[in-house]
Image (cartoon, rainbow, N blue to C red; front, side):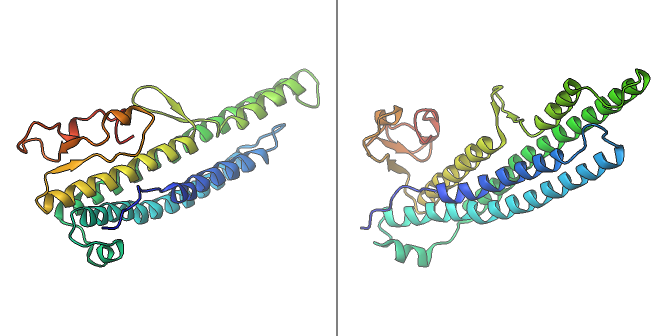
Length: 260
């Protein structure tokens, strides 16, 4: 029986992370073009329109990425189950007969929707913060110019200009706050979320395929782990909570110690 290596989606994830990095850089470049000494509402509106276009393109690209790679990860999981259960002996043979059962079709559809929603939350957060920063910078520029006129100066002082530039510069230096209050930079959050979703889709598809073929137990692989995984290597687990036998249910294993 051919041994299937553990999934590695680093290259696929990097493609999406790089797309977010490029978008954030493009937004920063667009904001840097604003004349901080006199930001007009028209110029601010034009800059925000360009930012919106950048984020729309990013949303389209990320949605396409999710639609391609979530099913791929699940397919890899089904292939693993087919080979591990001895239905066929090689990866190539498994790839010829792989298909999603009903529960895997539903799981993949749900995973795609959840992941796209998570990524959309990132771009919405960037959009909200950029709009807030541009409004603040525009108001600061307007007030500074008004004060300069009242005081007989022709230009805004350097400290005020530096403050306005700082406001715009920090517009994309923002992040997502998760359920436990941790703040993530956009690209780090995207990497973490997509990595988790792909690995979860792979694992769930493997389990669902095994159950569909009436295999209700599994053995956790042994790979010489140096972290908390080492306490679970080689252990037999149930794939269904009510399966007979004194074995732990895979769904009850602590996520921070296994499958992380």
